[in-house]
Length: 586
Image 1 (tube, helix red, strand yellow):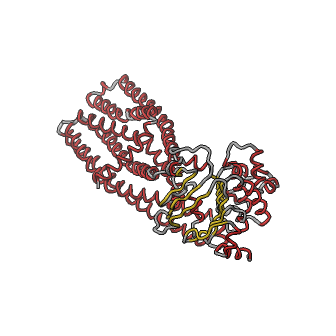
Image 2 (cartoon, rainbow, N blue to C red; image 1 turned 180 degrees about the vertical axis):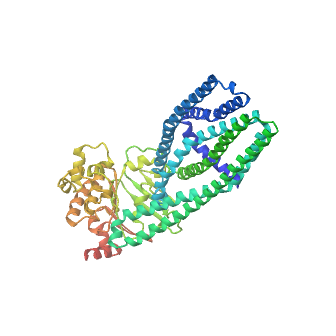
Image 3 (tube, rainbow, N blue to C red; image 1 turned 30 degrees about the horizontal axis):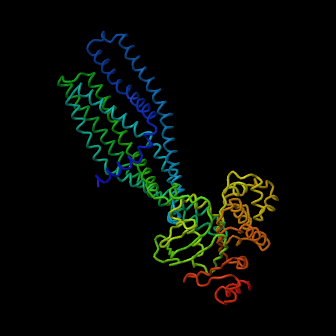
């Protein structure tokens, strides 16, 4: 177990070293300053020793010149100590912040490359915790770890050398006593690390629960479930409190053990020093200096052991950082893969089967489908048949379980994600608008779009009229997730984003489902204009919106059960005809 933990920590530190190495100039100067801060503490016992021995031998030897020299030396060392400490507190901490920022940037950049499946199985609150509090602990670790190692190493070595010079037997006795302190505190250090990791996980759970509750606050209030949400939050808080209680229990045992050893080392030095002085083996000055050195030595050892707490927090943060970084991104997310250039829009499903990760049930199996360039294909059918899943497979939001999908004859797995998705415009059933202005949300698909292009896109989406009626027009702030807009308004803005992108392939997943009849009529006219010459895949429950589709597919759990134009399927009198008749009566 010990070897496993050592190897694990070593591997995690190797992951961290490149970030530390990038700051090597600041780090080198920071460590130099750290070594300078040890001077005053090491020299003071020697100054006291010299003054004590001089006064014991003869008061006349304690001259004003000697006093002024040692006082001047000590003051100089303290000035150097103050300047070095200032550098460590400013530049050293800023170094830690830069490392934290670099790690956070890398982590967020990597999160953008992770697949939909990863986000399906992980809580956003947990990921937020890894981006914030975990990396803050890593920043403190990055700054203090090298300093603590260099400071305590210098002090322990210096104290041991000085002890040897004054009294070798006492030095060996004290040094033999120290390993027991590390051994007896080891178990509590291990438990503290486990408690810190549990604590970080629980903070992530609290974040996830809070985010879930606050984002759904309207649902909470509409069902009068405030007390239920409060109860769940209190339960999470109670679990977190218990974990913190355990960690502080281990910390208390840890500190108690150290304090007992402090007292043991002091009394050992006093007793042994007294016997050596009684036997004439030690002078009063040496005895006084050794007591002061023991104080420095114990303080250094305690500082090193105390740092194990910060080490545990830091290494836990690095571990949680590495856990996300080790998750493979989507194939092609780094630009690898072929760029087909201009996309024509011919799509073909070849014996495609799909099931979600972690499940054995297939959404559909052995699906074969060909959509020619410029065709408008609509998919209808009961819920659960896989209509939305088909749309998610084309831009590779999820990989096919079996079979392949081609775009213009190229397997989409061989294309770079950027090239593939730049050629596809999507209006999703679940509209998501970012916190910001209407202008920012429309031009999200084309950040360099001119005002004229934005207005034209909004006009074609049937959104210009209500946008221009708002007090700030296109600069109106729409709130978190577009909360200040109606469902229909949000839908039209999302459609405007696709108009602005102007892609060769369109995927419309219930694109007009949230619109009233008049708005639907306006948007449908615009969509039909946009669809000309483009490959369009439409999912619709409102069957009147797809009557002009080149081909309509009826998809059920058994696969594609009917296929043809609106007129052909009506004349056939099958499932589509039944669905259309049912819709007409609503």
